[in-house]
Each structure stands twice: as structure tokens, then as C-alpha cells.
Image (cartoon, rainbow, N blue to C red; front, top):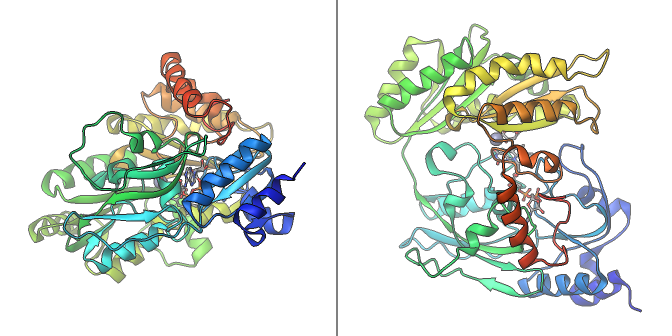
Length: 450
Ligand code: FAD
Ligand code: MLT
Ligand code: ZN
């Protein structure tokens, strides 16, 4: 009988089938180093037809397929379990000219967010998703996770950018809807079904994406605040005067200290504060003036040019790398109604210390997309396999009427806790969809469901 790797090599070329630990480590360990697995091989197709052929070969050999883009996901969803085939989409590099009439573009799954942003900018348009992983995170991965990011408060998450997909299903069939017809009421929206499906329903090979007009860069403000309650009310005041808020981010003294130790950046403000609010407003000049006036009342750093803005953003964007440099974090990505943010934040300290293993002190770093009620709770200290703090924090979010995954997904990390957010009926309906499209569980088993 032929071997799996032999059949894959015959299908896509031996040079695109990676085997052996040295070549595969970057694909079998996640970005945080918390999740690891083993793979039979990594297959790197260059076309949609090759993706379909790989799926068929794996089905014949009864070996699961784990789709992987940039491997920047934070919930272990792109990490293989035992002996799966990792299907890397990075060679799917289609990038069509921007359709400036429609404000749309078709991009291959392996195009990175940064490449897409640059491509849109060259045509005078803007992609609505931006995130610190932009140089590695891919179009396919951001669709599969329905990534949020820094501008969600203005443009929505990846679902809101998605107009159509091309994807390979578990039977090797290809669905394609890349025409960009926005007025289209012809049944189920399969693109939206695949968004957030975390590689369990199909492998996205290309997507039709919405672009936005470039807005005049106006003003970025970083201000110190007493805590999250003040940050929430200051943001509400800013939004009432400047509806063009496109980013509203929060971080705290503990995170700033880590970022500064990691990067060597100077203090952002003359005084130190318990917490910080970063707001970016674009649009008409009078909105920017309002923000600048509000900022003048506070201790704030204000930037009106891209370089100055990037310097302020670094304090927020470099949190993830600074935390990972300090250890293997437990990354808990939660959201609650904005009105409950302060109460949730108040409850977190006690809940996290109560979950500490005997004799250990845990470090908690909280930051996030406060404009959409999303906090990233990062805990350093527990062993990677210890789930105690994960359970406590995620249950707390659910108890405050929130989500156990604001933007990173369920992956392998949060499978046992999905029922905190989804009813038995909802999980049953999701399982029915999974079974209909992937009856033998070929695609990403162990992700989203047990
Ligand atoms: P991967 O990590 O490779 O995969 C993620 C999931 O998608 C897996 O389940 C995988 O199986 C599936 N998948 C990948 N490609 C495909 C495909 N073509 N078809 C079907 N399934 C596929 N996330 C946010 O939402 N907002 C942020 O602000 C943000 N900031 C980040 C900053 C840093 C520094 C880092 C490291 C991560 C950040 N993330 C953020 C998380 C991560 O970047 C996103 O989840 C991103 O969408 C993952 O894209 P990827 O290409 O790396 O996907
Ligand atoms: C972010 O907002 O920076 C990301 O979601 C990454 C993280 O949570 O660390
Ligand atoms: Zn985030």
C-alpha cells in the first residue's frame, strides 16, 4: 500500500511535503508555546486544486487535516493532535487587482493581513482589520477565526469584511463565490458560515473582501486614567463628541512595565498611572479638534502624524510579545457588556489569586479592545496544562453576561467550556452542520467540539 507522505508528494511535489522534527516544529507548536502536537507531515499546496487533492488523499488514508495559515492563533486551533497532516495555506498567494469601483478585492488564503493592507493602500483604500500579528496572520486564518483587532469598534470583525469565499470542503469539493455581488439573497451564506468555523467545516483558499475609503488621519491620544471605570466614561464622552472613533484600547501599569522592560521604550507620560486609554479618531477635522481638546484637559500624549501615532501604538501593540517574553501565558480573551467592564475587572484580581496553585503567585496582565468590551486577561505562572485559572476567568466572563472568546476563537483551549456560552440546542445545531459537511471528522478534529 502506498504511504500517505508518498501520495502527498506525488500530488504536490516532494519539496512541498515537509517531514521530520526540524522542518515541522514551527508548524506543530503554537505562537504562545502552550500548545504542541505531532504531525505526520506538513503539506504546502500552491493551488486550490492541490488543496482538494490533499484532502482526498488524507480522506483515503483516514488521517485528519489541520488547516494552518500564519500559526499566530492563540487558542491552539492550528496545532495538530497526533499524527495529523498540517495543511499550510501560505503558498496560496493569489492577489487580484483592487476593484476600486466596488471597493473590493479577491485575495488568496495565504496573503498576510499586512500584504492586504499595503495592496489596498496602493489603490487608495483601506482594509478594515488590523492586528499586531499582521505580518504573519493570513487572510484564511483571520476568516477562520473571525479575527477582530484594533479597528473593530469602527469596521467590525472579519465577518463584516467578508463578501464571499472559495473553499475546499471535506469531500474534496470546491465551493466558490468570489464575484462580489453584494445584493445576493439566494439561500444560506456559506462564506459567513465558514467565518469563525476554525478550520472545522472547510479550508478557505481565497476570499472576496470589502475595502473602505481611506480616512484622513486625524489624532491618536494616549492618556492616563485611574482605572477601567474612568477609561469607560472618558471613552463615552469622547464618542459622544467624536463619532469617528476607530480605535479605543485599554492597558494597565503592569502591562506597560513589561512592554517597557522588553522594548526599552521610555515612559509615555510624565506621570505614572494605574491604567491607560488609547483612542484614535479619524474623520472631519472638528472631531479631531474635540478629541485634542478633551486630551488637553488630561495628562495625555497626542499624535497627529503617522510616525507619532505609531510611537503611541507601540505601548499597546507590543503587549503580546512582551508577555510571551516573560513566560508561557494563559491567554483568556473575554468580553462583557461595556457597562459591566468595571465590575468584571474588579472581580478578576480575587478570582485569579484564588486559582493560584499552592505556594505560587500569579501575574495578571489585562489589556484589550475596551471599545467593544473585550479584555485580554493574561496570566503568567501556572503550568501550561493547568486549567484552573482558565476556568475561573472564563466562567467569570460568562457570569457577567459575556463571552468566553471575544475574538481568538475556541480552538482546542476552550472546548470544555463552550457550554458556558452556548446552549445545548446551539451546540447540537453546530454539531449537525459539522456532521453534514464533514461526516467522518476529517477537518480539524478536537477543535471547537470534543
Ligand atoms: P492560524 O493561527 O494558522 O490558524 C487559526 C485557526 O484558523 C486554526 O483553527 C486553523 O485551523 C484555522 N485556519 C487557518 N487558515 C485556514 C484556512 N485557510 N481555512 C480554514 N481554516 C483555517 N487576534 C484577533 O482577533 N485580534 C487581535 O488583535 C490579535 N492580535 C494578535 C497579536 C499577536 C502578536 C498575535 C501573535 C496574535 C494576535 N491575534 C489576534 C491572534 C491571531 O493573529 C488571529 O487569530 C489570526 O486570525 C490567526 O491567523 P493565522 O493565519 O495565523 O491563523
Ligand atoms: C491583541 O489585541 O493584542 C491580541 O488579541 C493579542 C493578545 O491577546 O495577546
Ligand atoms: Zn485583541
